[in-house]
Image (cartoon, rainbow, N blue to C red; front, side, top):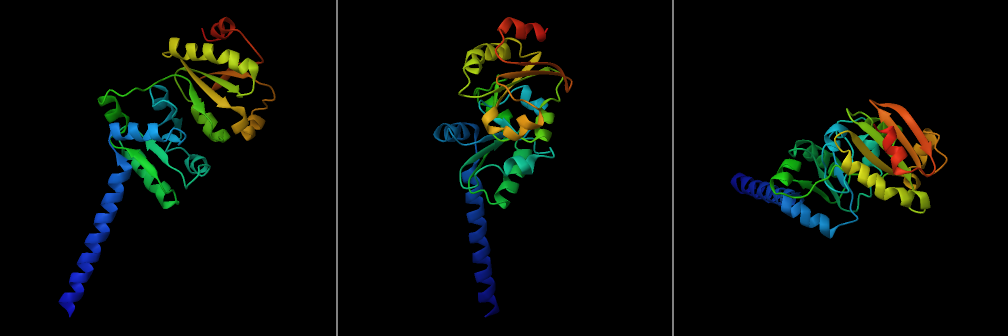
Length: 235
């Protein structure tokens, strides 16, 4: 009788382990699988959990930087829809694995991890960018401040999709991001999605550009401005 009971326990344990491993395999994807899933879920959040400095040196297109070791990680992630797919990655998979486990424990249903992180992504010759960062998630002031920690100048563009001057300035801001990427990080923040942040920063006009040097604001401008005048502030 005791032997029979032990056999049942072993079978149950084996089944549970197999199920868990299968689930992990389903959501822990190789670089090419991760790329494929991203293309099939274009509206899903893509979270880079590295530091802002790492992020500024190269990241996946359309990813949002939410530092796993930052104090605002839980606050920012809590703003996401737990019932929808979310993609996470880091440098080599360690931090994103911890972040994904935390998110699943908090009730997220589909958290896809990039196996081996951005290092494997690069090894597979898949594209990355250092260009304009599109941030649509509501952001805390603490998270905003963490984006300013950089050896490069940080150019913040507060914009809105309905703002005509914002649309006119977008192409040249993207050019600046590419042409001056060794010295400047350009970050675009959607004002409509970050109303609390705008209030914290006393921003009441769009577009508004802010330039930070080593975390300290060195220049601010509201309203339309030419590319030449912006570049002059970055030299």
